[in-house]
Amino acid sequence: MSPAILLSFLIGYFFILITIAFATSKKSSDNSTFFIANRNSKWYLVAFGMIGTALSGVTFISVPGEVGAPAGNQFQYFQFILGNAIGFIIIATVLLPLYYRMKLTSIYSYIEQRLGFYSYKTAASIFLISRTIGSAFRLYLVVIVLQRFIFDSYGVPFWATVLISLILIWSYTFKGGLKTIIITDTLQTFFLVSSVFLTLYFICSSLNLDIPQTFETIKNSGYSKIFFYEDFLTSNFYFSKQLLGGIFVTIAMTGLDQDLMQKNLSMKTIGEAQKNMFTFTAVFVVLNIFFLSVGALLYIYATKNGIAIPLDHITGKPRTDFLFPEIAFNHLALIPGVVFMLGLTAATFATTDSALTALTTSFCVDFLQMDKGAHTNSKTSVNTRHMVHAGFSLLMFLVIIVFNVLNDESVVKGIFKVASYTYGPLLGLYSFGLFVKNRGLHDKLVPFICLISPAICYLLNEHSAQLLGGYKFSVELILVNGLITFIGLLLISKKTDLQTKF
Image (cartoon, rainbow, N blue to C red; front, side, top):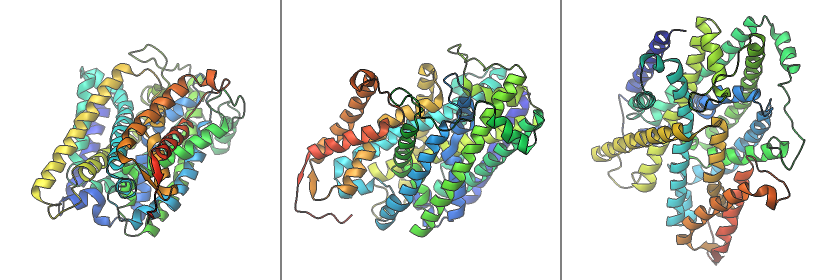
């Protein structure tokens, strides 16, 4: 497919998003609108839009690519998705009622009221670091595709592609914030969902398969195994590891993450927020089944047509992340290529724009205290927010550049590996706040506990085979990280007669 066609599509796509941003922020662009959309969002729009935010380009490219990876992944990722679903239900029934009862703008304000000042700043800092890294990983995945299939043809360097992408995202989010994001994410999720089903249709047509034949072909392909119960000690795919990891990664990366929770807090009532989460969960699970099916069909198509997994330009190794775009752009017709581009762009920019808004909100509320005082929506305060928004865009740019130099493994593995270390202390902090009563923390020591815990976890993960009789950790490592933090907090606490009201 011609790079000029793809570039024209990309320009048109962002023109639509900027038009929406202008329309939604025309009447009001103050901090209340930016942070929580004046608590007036419609639950069904948020539920639908959250799909695009939660899935991202990682799901769109890496998950299908991992189905046929040399490690024999197959559909094992669905075990993790089942854990995600349980985690979403826990968020809806445990965490959301707490956040609404306290009328929070930043969810880390709970830590301040429950545990103390230093605990609060630590939790907010963990989010800022974790979300910046995670969102940079996700955007990196799309940028390397844009670079390979569009901008290399024009001699545009990688760093310029990253910068252009972030400037475009900044341009439609800096003014309206969450109010704009809810509308643009709804549109982008529509594009994403449509592209999934259209991609399935185009691949099935190319393979001359009808619906019953498609199910039978996937079932008999050798890619469709879901549940893994072999080699508990050494296998990363073992069912209980993936399920537990899915539950606690979801609680930490969604329920204790300002990004997705910010959308939930923008609704009028807890009932609407819970309705949003339950609806989102059902759609999320079903869509991931289709993504895995796309992966199986991609490998079936590649085998039939003699298509090898493309090589990474930097490492020279086969990279499964590139298989989907390789087939969509170079082996299918024009329309399937455009559909792929539509879905990929929608998935990743829906994630990145939401993350930039959440990062800006957290820093402005948790560190600059913009939700307090009479000048919350003053011109000076709004201008400061704009500078913070631009600052996080620049920070994300730098992280992507560094990641491009250092990374040589699947992006989906990288994200959850980082999350196991950075989000684990949040699990420990919130668990201590929710379940430990009548004990006061030595608050100034909390930052040290939250640094020591990931360090211990890293060493434990590196030497688990020797220390634990051959056991190797998978995504369940985040639970261990949270548990170490929890124990550390107990050690620096003492019994008190004070009663907590939370």
